[in-house]
Image: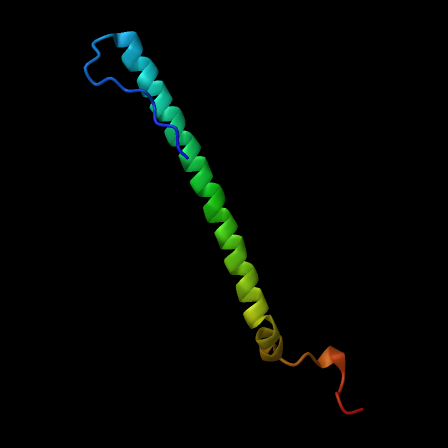
Length: 73
């Protein structure tokens, strides 16, 4: 559950407003880093899924390598 900062929009105290801004920026940075981690994890999962799905097919599509010799020797 996200913690919401205690914001008093009626406040005129500069120090209090600066503290609120710092807290909001810290929360934003935390959520951005969390989002980036989740995005990276999802990209890794997608890459692994593509590899599982298409790796065998891509092996079959590779051109013949003469250095392997004849298959029917």
